[in-house]
Length: 225
Ligand SMILES: Cc1ncc(CO)c(N)n1
Image: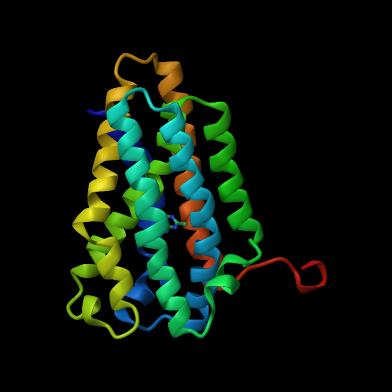
C-alpha cells in the first residue's frame, strides 16, 4: 500500500464525518443557511491567505526546479483562481474584497493555520506536504461527491462552489501532492512515517472542525472579540 493510501485509510472515519457533516450536505442539497455560508467564506478567505504562504514556503523548500515551479503554480492558483471564487461570492453577499481580507480569524481558523504553518516552518518538505494534503484532497473528494447529486452543480447559489472543487484543475493539484508525498516517503523509517501520520490525522481533524465551526458560526465570545 502506498503511504498516501495508508494515511487516507487511517483518517477515513474523520473524512467520512466531514462528508456527512450537515454543512457539506447542505451545500449539496442547496438547503444550507446563507448566513452560515457567509461565515464560512470569510473564515476560509483568511485561512487561504496562510494556505497560500505555505505554497510559497514549499517552493523555498522544494528539492528540484520542477517542484519549485509546481508549487509556484499552486500559489498562483490559490491566490488568483480559488480566492476569486470567494471574492465573487462576497460580492453577491454585499461584502467588499477589503472587508473580506480584513476578516478577524476565529479561534479554530487561527488554530488550524497556525498548526500548519508551525509544522511546515520547522519541518522539511514532506512535513509541509503532509500537513496540506488533507486540504486539497478532501475538498476535491467533497466536490466530486456533491457533483454527483443531480442538479447540485446548477444550483443558483452553491453551484459555483461545487463546480470549483470538483474541477479537473483542482483535482490535478491533489493528485500531484499525493504523488509527491509518496515519492518523498520512499525508504523512510516507520518512526518517521508514524510521525507524519499524526500530522495528517491532525489536519484532517481540523478540516472537520472547520465545517463544524462554520455550521455553528463559532467565533470569539462577543465580550472578547
Ligand atoms: C479549510 C479549507 N480546507 C481546504 C480548502 C481547499 O483549498 C479550503 N478552501 N479551505
